[in-house]
Length: 210
Image (cartoon, rainbow, N blue to C red; front, side):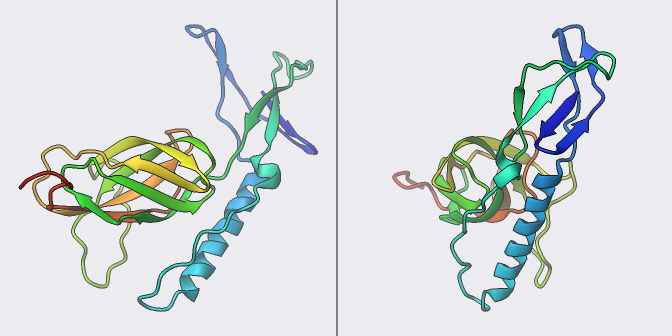
């Protein structure tokens, strides 16, 4: 399979899946998108350094994706010489990067509407992932647990105007307050590397009795 955009052309091996009668391949790294990702990471680092201790981070600024956010053309070949000319499109997009959640706390039983803000949050349907974090140690930076080492739940999110709205999911059996790392994904498979902390508190949801 060939992914083509302007002067960029990347050929990627594919296999035939007889059950679905389709070709399957792994999308290649796309240089324009990787360049945008580096710009975003640099911008996030600069913003973090500019925030005074105890201060609020600045409002997220939209990032122009340019070529990274445009469709590439996908064509296929059985012999690597003759290619289709059907001009099917595939979009390479930068991962959504989470900066903040509002409000930052909610009831232990979930069900609270929150707004997630950050970068590269396009309009439409997204997936939000909540990863239960171990108790914080003073002076230690919070990091995501390794895959499979923490309880994870996901929820559908709806994005518009650079923010995503989601209802906090339930962590079954949770009896004590805890923090969860909140991430976003455009495809429900790959999640952006940045996250914000949401606190599941023991307080009951509004309108509910203890």
